[in-house]
Image (cartoon, rainbow, N blue to C red; front, side, top):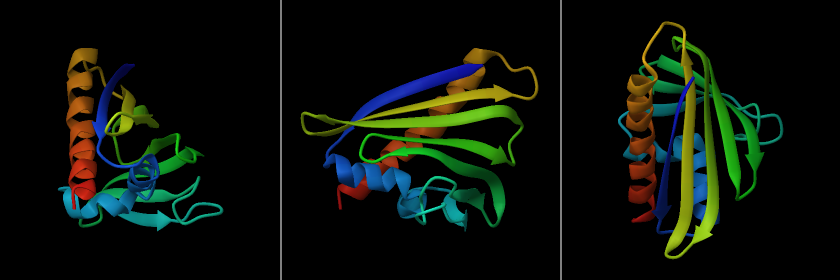
Length: 140
């Protein structure tokens, strides 16, 4: 299984940054793809169990929120639409000088043989646009 982690500081308070990542569709304005809520979470719209279609024009992957620790951590997994046995995202948040330290980790196990190094490069390519979108959203 391949994995990669990117750490960055976003110049905004932790509660603001946490909300941008957990309310998945809040970054749509800044991304080339869109998050569309397919099913609300068990107790909150974007809570645990929430499912989002991530893509364009109804085509993409379905992601489910699996863990939320307010202000500290979010986890999700892909449940449909991707050629993976397992794919999870783990995002943690901590106070840092100048804002919030975001640590974004993806782990993925493709259904077909792909060198880990290649998968890790692809994961970095998936993480960076989300971090960039959060920076743009907080710069408004």
